[in-house]
Length: 162
Length: 336
Image 1 (cartoon, rainbow over the protein chains, first blue to last red):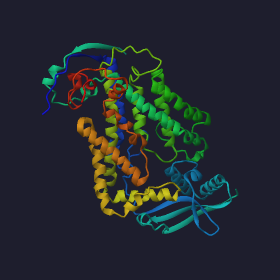
Image 2: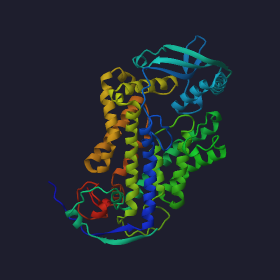
Image 3: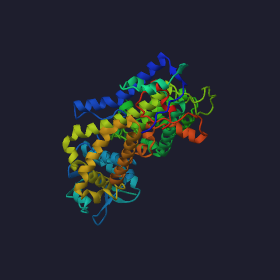
């Protein structure tokens, strides 16, 4: 059992009322900034996410075993698919944003997809056939080594001149 | 703002420790100015490195297609991305302002300026269709520090007028508030999993699917994916305990505020959790993995003490941090 050691007297600086009120306001604002999205989430599971006030919905919903993912690839003359980096696809180092860019282009229609295809082709800097496509995979099977998609749909393709 | 010095007798409170938790008194428990100053240095240094490392990515925002613009938060009112000049000034200026923040120079201006700059840059990163969750705590900590007297000591270019490292109510609340914000963020993340996924989330299938999907997505979009995640996906039995552990860590974050052993256990567990996320999904939470996110839970003045040598000869006392130090003397002045 630990012995209690008495602490000698010392001076403690206190704050005035105004400073304390400011600190309380800042504290309430900071707590609210984090807690309010959580309260909104309790009220509705569709509460919108934001920044820096976030509902932190990472990994909360089940994406399912079979997933459809949009991407942009190079198709070689032999018909093989070559993957491109997020920088080539979207001019971003963030893979999720690259995926969102492709998905949004596809959702906006053929014109937006063709524009994205041309943008990627321009970033390639070499002759190649570029394709905006949707792949459907069994993610569990992919993890086990089955790399071929269940389905692959080319939304639009274009030629990079180089 | 002014501070006054009042005599305080700690012995009375040690004999009669408080039994009821009072949030305001807990928040205003005195702490030495070095605790807050060290937090400023740690968070500021991290943010400065972040702004420097991310500089090319921030400058690349100027080359984004404008129709991808989906602003959030601070930037939500903008119809389009910031003009190139503003983007360049913000991206390049932030690391320099960060250095001034770290050294505490002109803090009344630099503190808020740097916090808002990092808030703007991080918001910009999240304004292209995907909201990120890696910089939330960094931004919140910077905003708290900006509103606090975090440069009353350990500064360059300012004559220090403090009478030593005397504990004050001025310096305790920002650090404790930063810790509360960390706890709340984890609790909200835990609530999100159960509110959106329901109790089914605990059976591990959702987590298994995410590990599989996230690595697959990275592979399809030409990014590096985890070498450990895909092989583990086939081991179904691993995921129920991982899911339960995740929710327990997140909803149980409040134990970190009780101090002592439980705080340390939670911080280590949360850190290991982020290591696991990195290992299985190649998702990096650098603020957490660097340890800076968890710094507010600790008596940071010890770092300054270790650098410049011991200044407080008083004897050691062991007690949990939730004991109201505002009644029992400076929380930061006790050694554990």
